[in-house]
Image 1 (cartoon, rainbow, N blue to C red):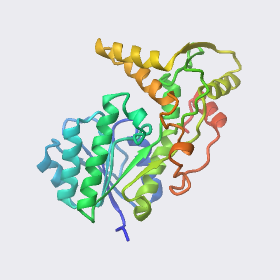
Image 2 (cartoon, one colour):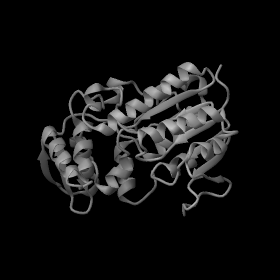
Image 3 (spheres, one colour):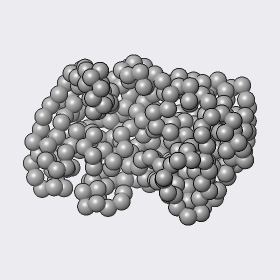
Length: 303
């Protein structure tokens, strides 16, 4: 039986996922929560959380990880060497569970992973963690695939819908389902993983708030706003090619084209109910209604 996980450290925690994960862990009521950041970080966290600092060298990380049952890696865009160092430090400190910094699309699908180096990097980290878990019985890992963060992406337009201009960019024919999740549901998923260590050890789990096509999202947005939206279309292959061309020129907005091409590419495994099977029930996630959630987002409410 897997040991219980009480002391939880968030590695990072100031980014997009930090707040909803902290909120879910606090709401659970059984965890002692710490957040680890660099000494010069200006980020603030809720009262009652322990704030730790580290220069992120391995000795410093080991010292910070001591006494922690679980580490949740929220460091964005860390290198492969960085990710390996985080895992090695956790092992040396006696951490029992390490949740990897994936929180993305289907990293178990070869077609999806082959699109971008970032994806293959995540697979390499996953394989490294699995090898360590195989070698050390008291250590385990978990990954979470959740697709785009629905509320965050609707607000900033990164999945093709511009709330200000009421224009939509549809990738492909718009009929490919792809799973998405609200930030709050991802936070609850992390809390659920830590609350059920035996059931989630060494697992790659899929969660989703809903699995709509882009045309279905567009229909909901038009219904909620009461307006017909202007629609532009781009092919999947063109989106990926143009995205890489932009990235090659130093234009980081090109990542959106690559990401959307991978998300909605047929055969890329991002329809999680079909490709991976959802762990929503296992992790205690509530059912969500896309229209209600979308309306709340447009009203500026938390979802």
